[in-house]
Structure formats: C-alpha cells, structure tokens
Length: 239
Image (cartoon, rainbow, N blue to C red):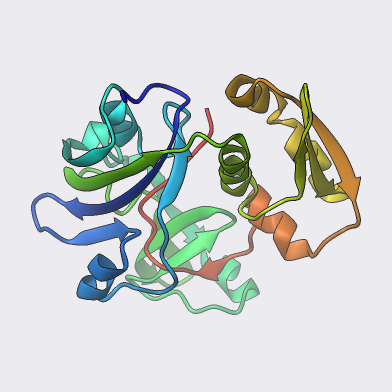
C-alpha cells in the first residue's frame, strides 16, 4: 500500500550524523542503550505525512513508499538546515542569575522554548548558540515504517498527543470531534480547528473542563522558564 499525504503511520527511527556516525536521536531502546543515551521509555512514533510533524526530508522521502525499512541520507538543507550566524547571540549574565543557574561553556539551556548552547562566559556576558546542534551537518536516518494507522480514534489520539503533549478526553460524533480542555487551553486549541477539519473531516468542538495543573498548560504551549536541558535535535511543527 503506497503511503500518501495525510496518512498516519507508525515508525521506529534512528538518526546519526553522517561524518561521525554519532547517534543524535532515536526511539529504539537498543540503539539508545548502545549510545548511552537512554533516558526514558521508548515507543514507536505516530505522525501524519506531509503535516510537518517529523523532519521534512524524511517526511518527503516516505511519500509514495510502502510499509518497510529504509535508510535515508539527507544533506544539511534537507535535514536541520545550515548554521546561521545571527543565531549566535549575547545573553546578559543577569538572565541566568535571576533563575539561579550557572552558565558553563558546553551546557545546554531552554530559554522559554528556545534551546541554546553556551559557547563562552566572559564577565557579564554569555555567548549562546541557538542553532540546532545538528545544523550544518548531513545526517542518515534508519526508518522502519511499521504500519499505516487506519483506526480513526487512534489517528485522532496520536494527533492530540502531538499537539498538546498529553492525552485529552475526546468524542467522535457524526460530523464533529469534541475535545475537552481546561479554560487556559481553549484559545490554543482553537488554533487547530482548520487542521482537525483538514485531517479528519470533522468540525472541532472545544468543551471547557475544570482547570488542570499549570505545568500541563505550559507543556502544550511551550511556555517554559530558563532551565538546563539535554541536547535536542529533532523539531516538529505543524504547518
């Protein structure tokens, strides 16, 4: 069965830098263990083709393919883009002091959703590189397309999980999809009405529920304070 745009598929993947063979991303426990990177439980990733939910170069390659295993080599422009000098910026030391963190060269921090690597610390100034750590590098992805997701509820659940970074209660009705979110998330959820209609042919109805924990809201909206973080390489954005 040939894969086409808007199909939901389940994959296992491992990404490596072409020149060094260094693993930078994977959802396969064995590969992460070999690289010494396993931090949490792994599971196959479900996404919709052509919707910006996975790396664009991989996404484009899989269109027209079938369920099975593939190795994909991507140049920088098809992977994480070229390095950009304007993304190397000075950040005042007071930003770190206010958060009670100590910036050290080589450490990674999350600046309200932007991942930056500390290049140098000099006096009251900190040089931060906001380029993706894999930018400017050719990469190789080993992809195993496990299956195409046919069940509507499974497709909706996976898309909700991608958007909101957690499960939400939802109900599929003849001509609409009802999802339950807390008041603080209503406006954010409304941004995706057209996308839900496009992918599932259902009008989105948002049902307000009791307010939930603040961190759940921040997880979905990407609103985060400055905090030290791990190396992040893969970025997904809805288009």
